Image (cartoon, rainbow, N blue to C red; front, top):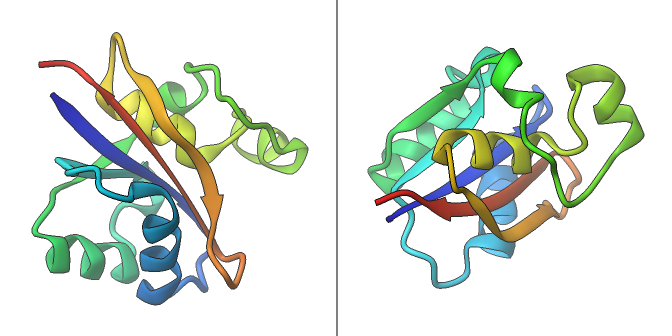
Length: 122
């Protein structure tokens, strides 16, 4: 079973922002990967978190990001990214067919990052 944490974040988000958003969503889930839009996949803060957690980062294409229906919706994010929630869409897209959210997006304390968790697959 795949359990993937999806992230949306501002360019100014540090590893502490990402870690806080993850803490608010992941709880006791054993993650298998992190996911984010392809244009953010090489961000130093995300790479640092992935290294700390010893997890791969899955880069989600713009096309795939707009595919899943998300549980939460931000009008601003919809205009910018063609999805209601980058974090939820990244997690769902990375898991693939049969994915389901097990934690909707949560926002970091500094409001620079969001994280959601999806599961599915074998």
